[in-house]
Image (cartoon, rainbow, N blue to C red; front, side, top):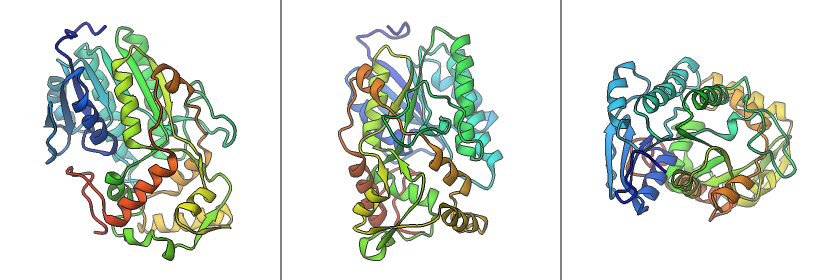
Length: 349
């Protein structure tokens, strides 16, 4: 049991990256949870979002000068859920390393210094080494060395090694690592469009009448999950005496056929190299922010087995992977968003 909290008082939870895709879903889930007394959401910018039992504070994890404030925010917490992450700029991996890796180290150090009993870290399927695209999926014991070419996967894998050492040095802190597949919801669609396709990509283009063909090539198989279902898994991990890693994904696996069905299109086989070459040219010209190295990583990600989460967290996705992608497509077309800076809803611009 949590040594810092009186069970009758409820838990004090701090969430970093609380205004993003997962953060907004998790904060809402915690605000509804009777066993949680208060939530402190940390972000670089205070949102216009008002929720029960929830307060907000500004902190930039990439800045050394914000370390004292971070330490102050977490010192009385019963649990810290670390979600903060920057996907861009993909042309400047030093900048993302500063935010994602050094920022995470600051969170881990603050948790240790404050003797916070629980740390839940947002890892990813991207932390895994290349693996099979068929079968039942890999368990949480699969190697986590990432794909070396992409900054995102390198950073996720590096933090897995950091947490290995952290758990060894702080055995009294219960550490949980969540490793979900791709997370979608309608409210995050505008942000994800800007991150991967660019801020000037018109969301209205993702309509069946404008996309009659979906390219099919080797390795195009991946798993998705609705963000609200991922948040439910985080909530369950927070409230149960569990440790270690949990894979999160919904069925079915998304492939070219599934995408074609979503877009009322048909598949056409194309060489993988041609797709990568076009993406590489667009990225180098700064037309799209998604890098060809991230494309390579996606094609090598293994499929995940979610047996442990279903068994130990008693967790089941409420929506299929197809429903999650449908929600994303609705949001892209309509400019879906939320009342936070990262999730501002826009169709273009």
